[in-house]
Image 1: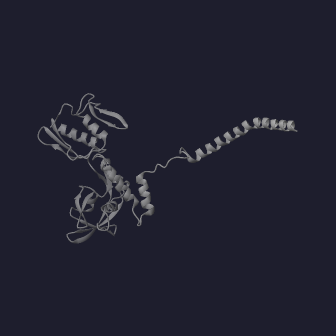
Image 2 (image 1 turned 180 degrees about the horizontal axis):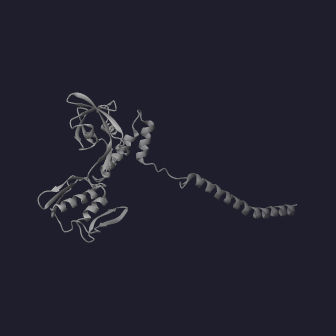
Length: 299
């Protein structure tokens, strides 16, 4: 009997030796299959990935879910980002999404609107400048007019932010806006057809004396180089030999516009400027063409 048991045990061991590799192979294949499916569902994320949520985001989430009163989360985020920017250089600024289009207008060289500048005095919108030959001047608006309603909607700065007032007045070129104004104590209505309003980069360009030209550039916008070349052509035709190039108050703008203007004063392949950052390779901007004022004198 003992011999019979030994024979049966030996046979079972032999069967196990035969089937065990096959079982392990099947398990490995199934594991690889389910692992691949899991990767497809989770993308590149690790299954046991650590939570990389920032402390700032955790604070925002806690405020949103646990704070006793309702809060404007977008406003809180903007304030937090501005606090971070304060630790950088003065030229690094954060522009909220709601203000991006307005900021771009300054560098695009124009916008669609009615062509006035206004300020708030005693919670009332007062017109302080009317662009010559612009939509508002054509409609009869004057400096000193007080705008009290836009399309029958009263506007008072106590209840309406100035950004909202600006959006109400502006609009697509060719559309009309009805303004109710106060002039000399009388209420009048003016319908203004909106148009394309230029924002020139050059404030002034003239001959200061018989041989000296003057150009004041307020920003390096998309039209800065074109305006500069037009001014230079007129001044050179007027006998300019020296140039006063006034950049006081210039708020900056596009690097390419600044480089193109600088190239008009430099000969050869002189280095104009270069950009470089901790994680950004150096990029040189050099003079590349014959400038219109290489032999002139800057004063």
